[in-house]
Length: 564
Image (cartoon, rainbow, N blue to C red; front, side, top):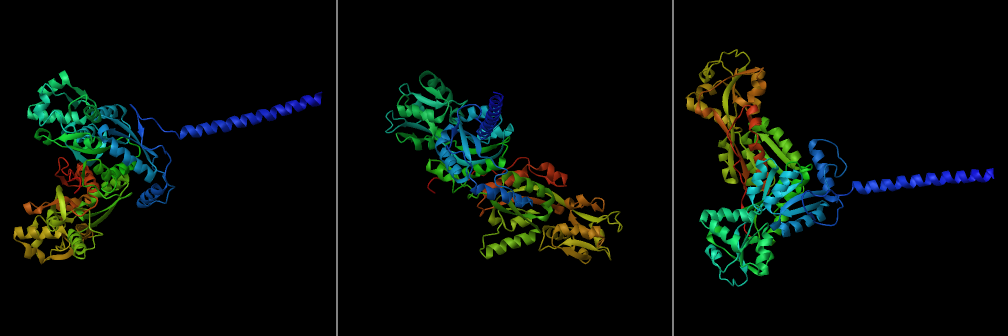
């Protein structure tokens, strides 16, 4: 008996330990499943572009390693800074093209896009409450602007344009020809709710200007209906429950039983469809990557065009696009950190070439003359408008960003007792200037000396001519010269080694313009770079520039019509 009880106890412990191990294994399995599950989107039903939630490695590992190589670090494991899903608030009228594009994107890059549909204003209200998500695609740019003004959206990328039209059944049985016909007693009308849908807001704005809105609103309230989204407006007309509705022209691509009546009152306004990147998105690179895919001329915009939209010009698709930025040396201290931050947020490469503007424009001309194409800058920020004007036929959308003065820089303490330009003509004075054929400061210096009538006298004392403005200050700090004509901004960092003498002349000002190359295949990315520069007033002023911009001016609304 004792032996038998000992065997029973031993068996009991074995069984108990096995049970505990099984429970631990089962719990670990459940934890693994839970941690891999998706997070439901806030505020409403979510449509997923595909049932596949798996992450594709093909595109992303290269993207991640390139980003780290750019930063100067070692290669990381794939997808260490990406996400396998994105949430997008999407205007209901965009459902057909966006759903297809999202499926294409997941198939190509393994990132699923959860699409939450609704009226543009309804979605904006949801976003205002939730303050989470990746992207917001509105039926009209005014909603994106409101989201940007309230800090909900950072970047915005244009996609397409639409115009409102009157939709009727094929054959136009009620013979509706204009807005006045919508006011007839025998005609019932459906319009998007102005407080929910972009089409409703646009309709109210246009017909208020034409003097029709108050009467039409009253007529619809009595005999028609307001709907929260544009597809619901079109569906009512399709079903025959309503005689006419006001929809976007692109909407009718989905409704072969309907036809569009264009009227001058509605033709007066178009809507720009844009996608915004939500400020609080934890993976801005991934959100911006999908936004670029949506807006690419050979990816998303192809689908938008097939769906009846008039699409914008759009950039050529690249998983990690590279742009070339020719930048005059004087701008370097203002833009260098901006460029690093831009690259990091966007997940792109900006190949920046700093040099004297004479050298930069000579490079451009060589590239053009040899018809090389590759290497020509996408963007150019000159030290002064003089050098942009020399190549202006190759650029567009130029904007003056800042300005700085030409000053006389002397060693600390001003041992040569220089007080004005005239003192540079004294016998034995050693002067440094920029080389006029290589840099803007050289051209400005000659123009200034000519304007003051002392060019020949000063040039006799010039002992050094440098290729860029950045090389002038070292001649002063090393006391190789008694004075150098340089930019005020270049002297900021050397205040303990140099003194400056102001030059009171209109010819002593250099204006720095920013422009985008007409030949660039990444104009929209270049516009976002411009907007980054345009928002950097504090950075420019901190290094001594006078900032000229109050608001960004480059809009990027160039449209390529369907079929062109």
